[in-house]
Image (cartoon, rainbow over all chains, first blue to last red; front, side, top):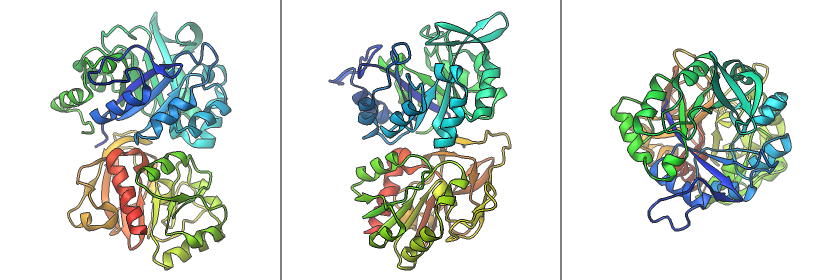
Amino acid sequence: MLAKRIIACLDVRDGRVVKGVNFEGLRSAGDPAALARRYNEEGIDELVILDITATLEARRARAATINAVARELFIPLAVGGGIRSEDDAVAAIDAGADKVSLNSAALADPALITTLAGRYGSQAVVVAIDAKLEGNQFAVYARSGQEPTPREAVEWAKEAEARGAGEILLTSIDRDGTKRGFDCPLTAAVSAAVSIPVIASGGAGGLDDFVDVFTTGRADAALAASIFHYAETGVSALKRHLISRGIPVRI
Amino acid sequence: MIALIDYRAGNLTSVRKALAAVGAEVFVPSAPADLASADGVIVPGVGHFGATRALDRAWVDAIGALLKAGRPILGICLGMQWLYEGSEEAPDLHGIGALQGSCARLIARDVKVPHVGWNSLNVSAQSSEAWIARGVPDGAHVYFTHSYAAPVTGDCVAVTRHGNSFAAMVERGPVAGVQFHPEKSGDVGLRILRNFVERAG
């Protein structure tokens, strides 16, 4: 049976993980490769490196960081932030990324999805959608949630799939950083509308938040950053909890 | 030396890094004639079966000659599908036909297709004797990303179910294939690559 995936996100700036790290015994706190290694030992299923300054400051995700992580970890690695063109995607994939995550660039130029899917296959193209509840619909925002767009999340996800996206990374702006749980209505609406996997992001606080998003939210994968960084929730403890609730995960 | 075939179907970097991690020496042949010196050959790949069009008659002949000499071959994902007679994804093309059968689209019966993520291998007790499966426990999870797959036949070493059951790992003499990505399947995947490298000698 296909396992639900637990994905850790490393928010990187200038080659260092930001949002802080607090692992006991991790000497080089903030080093993406050291943190990635730790997650791997705990059984993380996939990693996302997000160069959080890249889009705003037009920086590319740093090849050295990608390379350092990919050299020793043999699980899927996605890279986002600053993938604005085919050349940016090529640089990330050449450095060792398996997937690139497009957000603002896909909104500005949806044809980029098709171009990259044609070159590398759909499995290499993740479209990241940042959405916020406005009235009775989920509005899509660009540029790290700062810039409104005319798009609606469910329709944009369907279009992204039709254009060749292989996965949707769906972040709730309302829940991001709140630890109030994932946005299950948003996730379920998008998951029901597309046949590609949906990764839920934003709001992870406790173990049961993951149970909720895999059941009510119909997510295929769930992503979190700070709760793993601070070791509030160990990956292995989380997986044991999911199994006890009847949710299939990789051990 | 292991020959890693580059036919522009996806990214070789991951496979190269994983082979380096298990201590293999790897080269990417620029022409079919370069294959003559290979101890084994890996056909990687992701994406559409149409990409295998680049593996033309000269490549088929060179790889076929290696197989006749008993050198092992490992097909990964699309590379495994190419070991069969063909795929309904690109009906006008043929695979190398080292394995019998043809690949078909997964049936989206209460599941999403493409099949993306970690799924478990059903490894039968007798299959654990297979050289490619040595040390791979029944129930081990490996990372898949595909929409088409090969049928369950006598060559199957491990079967996985997603919508329908399909060949996850196959072996017939020196020919082996994995539908998943060993280069992205953690320690289990590295073990499978090591099994191949040891067989190549």
